[in-house]
Image (cartoon, rainbow, N blue to C red):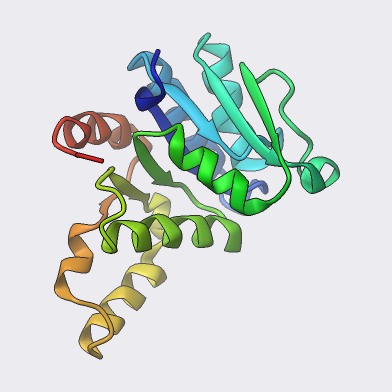
Length: 188
C-alpha cells in the first residue's frame, strides 16, 4: 500500500443526531477496505471518526490516525490504528493528512470538518493540488453549504469553476468508486 492509495476522511468526532451519519461512516470504512485502500483521518475513537476507523480496522485495512497532542482527552486517540501520528498542532496535522492522501472526503461533522474541507478546496482553487474532493451529503447534511456556494457565486465572490473543485454524493456507497474514477485522472 502506498501513501497515494489512502483516502482522507474529514468527519465529526461526535455521532450527530441522525443515525445515518454513523452508518455512512461504517459503510465508507468497509468500502475503503474492499477497494484495497487505506484511511487517513483525525485519529479519534469517538463519533463518526471512530465509526470509519473501526470499520477499516475490522476489515484488516490500514488506518493512519493523525491527532494533535492537545486533543488526547477530548477525542480519545484510536490506539488500534496501524499508525497513530501525534502532532504538535493542527497545522502539522492537516499537512500530514494531505501528504498521506490521494483524495479527500467530507462526511457530516462540525466546524473542524468544515474548516478542513474548505482548506482542501482553497488549495485546489489555488492550484496546489488536483486530488478529488468529495462532499458526502448524507440525508442532506451539506445542503446549506451547497446553497452558500451558490449564493457566493450569484454575488460574484467565487467563479463558476468552484463547482469543478468538488463532487457531491448522497450515499456513502458512491464515494470509493468515485474516488477510484477521479484519482486515475488527477495530477498533483
